Image (cartoon, rainbow, N blue to C red; front, side, top):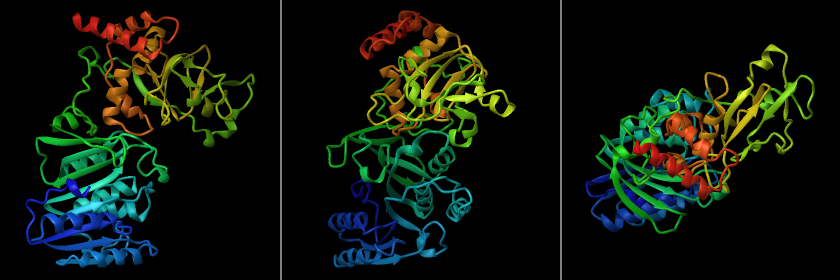
Length: 446
């Protein structure tokens, strides 16, 4: 992280911020680099840490830093998000940060203060990020390690728009293993390092990729328009070198096809009175993501002890079901062990069905799809090319409905032709990918 910052233009006294400093590991790395490569500079470090158990260790670290010479440090023990302490608000030339993670309740003081100063954002790490960017001087730089969830989905759209209006992206590094960095913290998504400069975006971004911490890092400079596509209204940040190319025949979105992606309507812990473990005359199937397989959606599979039947017959319950028909179901959460991030299957029923809110489903204006189209969609969603495209903008366990809405799809005729090539079973992955290549090539030729 310290190595990603550009030291060439610094002069005089460099003002450094490390919010959520911990014991000072990032600060010490940055100071070591600065004293080694730019001994002409004076350094002033502002370290923010609220954990009283860490502050004594941090003080020892900073004392050792001051021993370098021409280094002054100060520790602030107030909350970085709520305090009005002016020393935390800059301006700073460099920020280096490993912020805390965790959701911020909408009515929390931390979220309210951050919204007033910068942007309303739902997580501690993005709030720390926003406050740090706001504290930068023009031309100042920040490098930060965060979960990758900010880069896609509707949840962080406002934050992405605000961030990209404030800074230019310089470097993006992704750790491609979801369980190798911060494995003890329960962060079930890829972690990324981002460095930025306060000011306009340059034409290019340098992409870095490593399998895990300490592994060899690959580097490539790519156009910014590859990372954030001009036509993308959600401003997804894609960790891609541009080599994953969407075939021309799959240039449609679900909206272009007249298909809608939605999230299941039933929140099981809120609707316990409507759920039962055994079928009754007034029940319909309750589908969880555990029922979803590429080979189909099998209601007979165990849902890990969850009641798999849903009571209907009253207005409140009936509003939570979908009509009889054919639907494409997609898991909202994938496990680390699954080879594909997107796992989809076809559900067909002659009765209404209830879908858990940890599933996504594709439908046509609230009703089922043509069975052949549904099968073609499932084959496409489970293909390797689709998985490759998905990974360019998503590095965590969740597949959001917003993600599905921006994915590329072939047209309806091509999807139906794909379904007719595998009418009875879902082929193995290699055979499936060959079928997809075949129909896309034929579509491109016409």
